[in-house]
Amino acid sequence: MKLIAFLAVFLIKLAVSEELDELLGVLQGKFEKPDIKSTIEHLMDNYEFSEKAVIGAYKRCNDEKVEDENLLSCFIGGLYREKILENHKVMLCTSEYFSGTYMDCFLTCFENYTPECFTCVGEHLPDLLDCILGLPYEFQ
Image 1: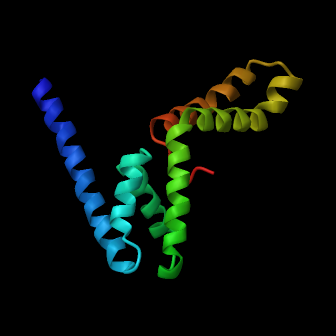
Image 2: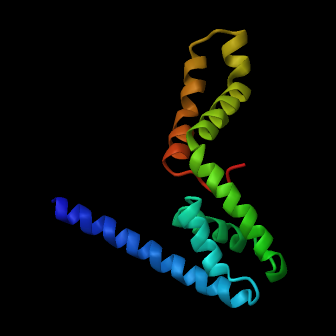
């Protein structure tokens, strides 16, 4: 059983590494002057940027259909954003949960003190759990 779990983790890491290699090839082809591959590897080795953060930053720029001349600035901003999301995910998700709950449940909970208050607060719990388990990169 442990061998199967180990193999599953290994295959996932291998797939992510292949995706990262493909991404580095695409970026290397778009930018001739800066050695983008060694720069990204330096960020990953020395500043603890994960493969997931690098891939997430690129996907975000790709999803926004950023033009080639703006791709590098979008990618750098995306790396910073992904790093913040990785390091502060729980705090950001909790903050989003409390602000959303406050806005939606204010009248129900704080003016009427009815049992619907608990229902309202509970409706937002799945969003909190979804956020913590897999933070979408549309998160603002």
